[in-house]
Length: 348
Ligand code: DNO
Image 1 (spheres, rainbow, N blue to C red):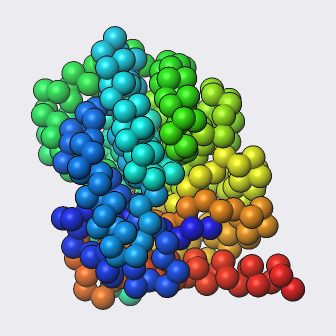
Image 2 (image 1 turned 90 degrees about the horizontal axis):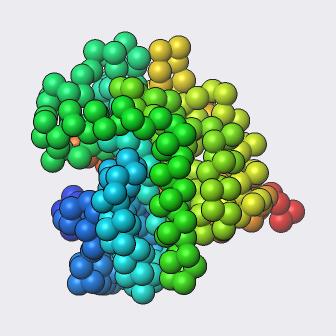
């Protein structure tokens, strides 16, 4: 596995130097952030990110994300121009040596939590999702601010978007995803780039919007939409793991054997009756079998990218919810240690 770490570009408070000091760190995971969704990324911006990364001794091989324009998800006639721009981004990133592009196909919202700073007994804070809090949230009242949330939407645009999504159910969303994949995957073959879809987080419909990358059955269907290795997954344990019906070890085993996992997001969560709480990465802190997941990856010779996912805020750190340095670095080190131990065990 290639250990990697998300970096939000030059405005990130966490320096590339710090990231490179985490043992065994291989690649950054980053993106061009100052270009609106649906537009082509200037070559200079890509080259700059690459240079900064490589100067710090890290690889520039994973992009998270190239966001998909809503018109593509909605299947509007205007989608073709946005798909053309997407293809151009794939080509440009491929030219710059990028091997893996993470993206998602979630309507309107990226990942959703109901509270960003839930204090635990030890004084750390983390992101949580409680059903009763979600029920009180109204995405149309103009006050909602979520971590994965495009804050450039105006209240009116949002209303319109929600109206448009009334015509899009799961079937339609699958159809629109297929249309998109059929056009971009051939470009990926030429550009030597793997696409890695991020599951829906949480893996169930919220605010009446459809969700499709949620469980094994739907992921099987997704992989067949275009049956090419280039059409693969970001397997996010915390997202899929929020549904206790998802057998993560089985799924990781199956999809890594198929060579369809290009990117692993590993984190732990504690599943509750009314939602879930993000915890430290360590096996005993949450409900997920992190060691079991790592074991099948080692057994199957996984050589894709793997990153610690959201960290808690600890040691007084402040910053982007889920994306501080300290707890993610602990997570990286923990995952690296588990990996080394499992590999060692296998060699004996
Ligand atoms: C959350 C992330 C997601 C992910 C996108 C991929 O922390 O895992 O925001 O980057 O869904 O497009």
